[in-house]
Image 1 (cartoon, rainbow, N blue to C red):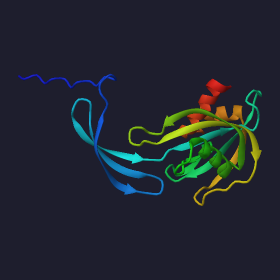
Image 2: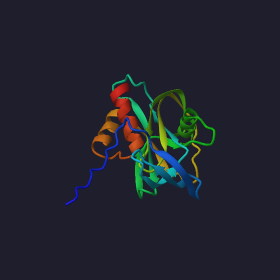
Image 3: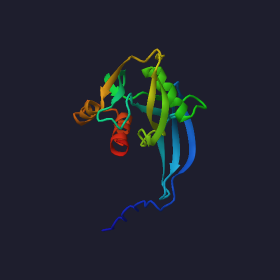
Image 4: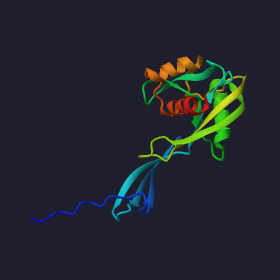
Length: 194
């Protein structure tokens, strides 16, 4: 009986994967799809389908000072085709070519919720789904809001809500808020800013 060698486990200190080639199979308005040929740290090769995305920005807008006991926050309730339902979210959107994450956050806050931020603070940057896409979402906190007028895109069907922070945290706990970027941003604010 011949014993098989156990596969070598890749350690964090091993060399990274190498991209050998990339083939664009689809180009769209929102994303592109590539098939990448990669070499793994153990020398084996494989094709990976990769969704290429320009990145996005999202913002947690506060109507009141965070230091208040139960400040109001702005959330949107938006229909999402992929989920086939209305989803609670913070204002967010895709970066335009050459646009900075901060510029995108300001633009999306104005377009979707109708507010201009007097103060904008970077929270963190997260990968949306790193198993198949390179999309990074830059998360921000907005304050000193000035109300203006929303300018939504033709495919955006949403309602703007002003909710007490305690209500928002209840919505997180009971599972009413399920959008990943929104959950990360809200929990980041709750843990590190409040």
